[in-house]
Amino acid sequence: MSQLTTGVYHRIGTKFWSAAWQRCTILPPRLVMLMSFSCMSIVNYAFGLTAGWLLVPGDFGLLAFAQTILTIAGLILNSGFAWPLTAALIRSNGSQRASLVRGAVTANLLLALAISVAIILLFAWGPLKPGLETWTVTGLVVMTLPLLSFIAIARATVQGFERFGVLALFWVCEVVSKAVAGVALVLAGFGVMGAVGGFLIGALIAATLAM
Image (tube, rainbow, N blue to C red; front, side, top):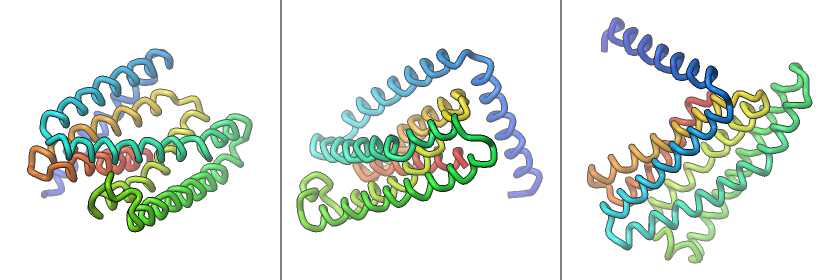
């Protein structure tokens, strides 16, 4: 790709995110959060219906089991260190905030790695084998968790700064990219592994945006 084409894509992307950010900051915070929750609910519902239509019942059950594990792990990663970080950022001054965020990122990442090891051991020993079935699906779930840990701290950080437009942008981008990537991979012939892989791609895009 030529430098001219790359520069054009860069300018288009910059203008897109700048316009999206301006819209998020102009609207009232409560309206922004309501719109993001509505959008996520619609996309998640559409993703579930589409996956149920494209996948056979057994594969859809496998997807539901993997999604349940990610949801439970996500609740842990979004509460253990993320909530105290938000409260600490509100009370802290500028010189303390960077160290607070770095410490929370490290701690939450270690927590995600601990959960990942527990999932691997439970699958190897057998309790999770009927639900996840293959090492490929297990690996996709495990690789998603460190990204979710980083996203959780990013959300907590923007909440501490009361930047709810950015928070809504994180949520919507993660859910939409997950749904689009998952459905696209299923249609490409990857089946349930593609649907689960959509969660990994969505988390990767959201984590990149959170940077």
